[in-house]
Image (tube, rainbow, N blue to C red):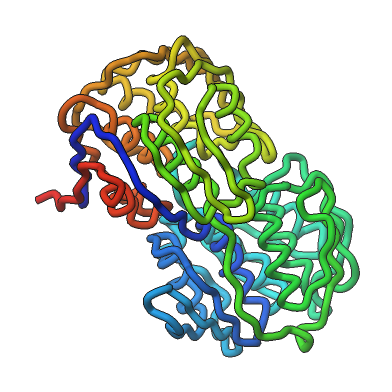
Length: 427
């Protein structure tokens, strides 16, 4: 098991590039199952979850080939899929595995997918996924930890589906299933995240007719599999990694340029930074953010919310930053009930944080101290690394396999900026 050893406090300087989005790439990889035409994905992030999804697809019969090893371009060929079962051994570590359910069912009329695992940040049921597929004509049974889905020979039927909550995963699964359904599917109260928009762009390249992504109503016209086409596609940059790197610059009062960002995907984040009096410039054309040394950051009140609100995936990292600003801040978590697990570890580093229900009260101007801490989930891991950059002394961040699920070589990126961070293997 790998750990990070980080010595602080530190000042960063230089330029760092953001990798492709994990949360955009995973549904796009699942969507490859819809088409028998070869498709190339470019600049895939080198992450544990991406490797897991690749293995899952290969286990189903997907043929993969490295086109460009340096930039991680991979070609995928789903013309000879031989299995319709996503097994527990592969699904247990990654919640996004459930995204193969819709594509498999749409193309092959049947699918068996193990109930998913992933981060333990709260109850994230797949009821909305199943409800949407049932509305399109699927028969679904859950038995022995597996979702078994089937549909009549004529296939899924387009219909209007109103989601009880704008679930990203349910929206994605229904979108993919609808591509090969008969007629038009309308998703009301759909998720609006940039990752949804990117999936729609990918499906359009595939040949699908889709409109409304980025709004609460998405319409998909079903198509014939014979019209699927080959193409190459590059997923969008990872907005959560971009926010994490920007927070690292602000926490350490550093001058840093963050490249390969989509500022239009981060509006709520940049608005919050303005409220905090952070010093930065954004060049949308060049897709960069220049962070300047900010000595006078102010406290804020922030509520997590579905996009375009402040993302829950950046809440933990923001909390680390708030320990270093002037005054007391309040962070309210409205998405996942267990997403404050990083608080106890930050308090080991002398953070002054009080929890009251879904709200965290964070005192600023706190001198953090190095300590051994343990990662509990992906974003909590990033929060601990950020805190270690400004803490006095040495911090050991344990169980960073959580972090490796969503950040590509984070220690190398931070080290290149001047951080004293190294990966060590626990004996």
